[in-house]
View 1: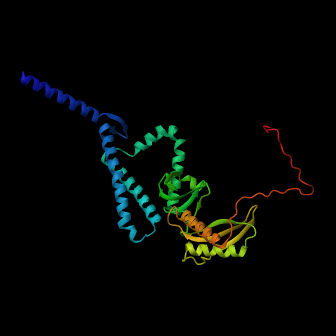
View 2: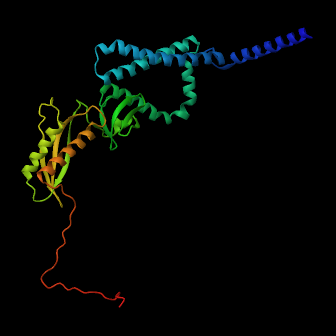
View 3: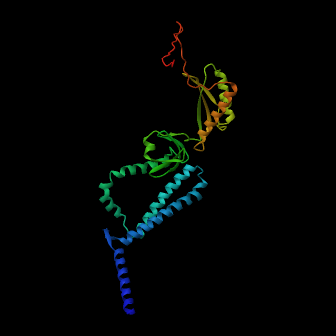
Length: 312
């Protein structure tokens, strides 16, 4: 009885492995006389996944150990790392196809079969891929740049082949298609260097000494030390902007070094604190909306007392 059970167990195991072997050798399609089986396709996918991991690791190591000796700009290193990643990825993909005995003509067959379904949908993807290559080569924007996109100010964190990731204030992340940077107007605050000119607007009450206000604004900037000492002309500039409805409006322009996302807001806030303190010490009122009421005194004012609610 024991022998019969053991023989039955061996038959079941043989049947299982036979079925598994048949599935492994099942032919999905034949291209140029080469049979693409479940086994070859599985091996190819496994090698492709390993190729992606190796490509990412190799591109980082090559960029860090080789190109970092000659390239010191972070955005350039990022572009080199991205391009080397895709180079290694193509190499490992071809290697995986060769090991798995999958001919390259399979893409022609599959491409012809799927061209109608994916032809129109892939136009946008191809457009973003090409735009990503242009961004890496021409560098209108770079990793670390501070840009304005659709009215949102943020720092470029990553430029991929299809999209670019931007971190805005409040740790918000925007994913922008690469083609948008070539089709739309984009304001790059730090394209050439990290020195930008910012301004703060303030209104003083009518009757204030305009020249005194100019001097106080310049002193406020010097107190905050917001201007860049390395700028050829870091001179602070105060402009009398306009005669407003309720105030005399002044703009003070100054240079700052922009290295972090909140640098500009912090500098502007510190400057406003300084301006408020100096204006208060000098007795200058920061204007607020006012309305004047004029009474016609050409004739005596008529006053009427309403006693309709008098309980008596």
